[in-house]
Amino acid sequence: MEEDWLVQQQIVDVAVDHSQRELTSHGSFSFPFAAYYDILHKKTLGFVNWHWHNELHYCLVVEGPVTFSVDHSEYTLAAGSGILINARRLHMARSRRPGKGVYLCFDFSPRLLSLFRGSQLEKKYVKPLLENPDFTALPLEPEIPWQKAILDKLRVLYAAYRDQRSGYELSVVSLLLQCWSQLVENTQTPAVQKTSVQRHQLVVREILDYIAKHYSENFTMDDIGAAVNYSGAECCRMFKSALNETIYQYLNVYRLERAAELLRQGNHSISQVAYETGFCSASYFIKCFKSLLGQTPLQYRKNWELGASKDGCPQELEKAV
Image (cartoon, rainbow, N blue to C red):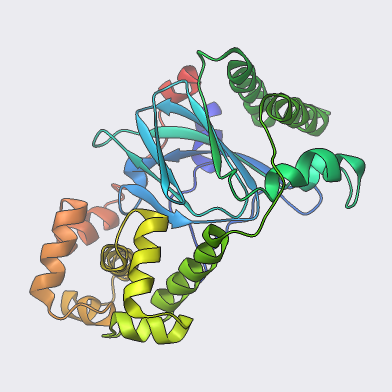
């Protein structure tokens, strides 16, 4: 029964819109909370690519190390450590060991902390952190007592959500508030100011949107610059500064991700997939695909059809939490 629950709670790949906003529904409007496993080697690309969402996002590493990139910062965490990622922040996750990397995710709307819009809780304790441009993410280490207290509460929260006994929603909200209280007591919240970093983040999202709409085409950096009202060189600089990778690196991975989707559909030839995702030739596409995923497009399609990427989540993970 527990293994079935674990399989149901996995998100194999993150569905996003053109701006890389995650489209997955986390909970419901009446109870906007969800907990689930991310098992990195089961992802199409072997990692979680750049995306963002409106929810706050705790991660608890079960099998590490895992490197989380949030905006321009990186955090490599061992098993037992965790991280809180602020709402609306671009982030991604990679395993540091091939075939490894598992963590629990807790996604929830800030509404659960505020109780209602305009409340004293929202004004004094939630918005100051949510809207602070310098508060992108906070790594949580078990060696630090107050951070260990949050990690311990996340484990209790996970069990409450998994078992879903009568009144579990009250337990979830209570534990989230206790975690947030620890956070507020132990972090500083300077006054919010509009910064160049925020402006650059908006431009980066516009670049991501442009790539999502035009990835199948042959475009230049100047084309991107014209679309976002900056020079191509400035776009490259801001993008690299924000995400620690170049536009071309991101574009190549994005094209391969879309290519994997077409391969799973099974009704496109390898050449068709290559040209529909913006690669100049089938041979170059095959080379890039194998370099990133460790197998040719044809091997990937066959493995997918055999169900190699749909096996369940081992029960050992449950014991490791």
